[in-house]
Length: 159
Image (cartoon, rainbow, N blue to C red; front, side, top):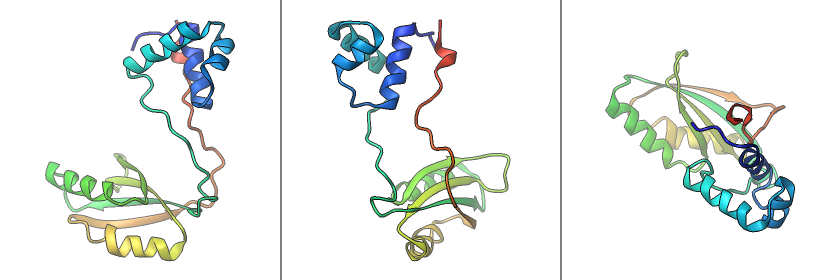
């Protein structure tokens, strides 16, 4: 990973906070005119540093207040079993994140969002328990989320 200069790093920091910031506002904040600022953004995108720009919705206000961490163990960790599982959970809209993990008795950790407990129970019975190779499922209901970051610390990218 190449180190970034102060301006590129600041552009990334500001875009992480608000991807809808105008080029004019961004250019002003980093001390450039609009054209060079726009050019730098395009270069950061071309390098793959900016993967995508999204809007983060308020989970509760859109009617999905329940967040759940689901630990799943497979009967075997073969390439085929892992692919089968990953392909199956990719089709479940309520699965927001899926991690293949180590250091635990579980093979996967999923973050799932649902309307309520009944919705989760239906998802569990209709989708998760029927995936070939699933051996056990442990459900952890998130009570609250004291930290919820979407912006990465970029200090290590400084020249």
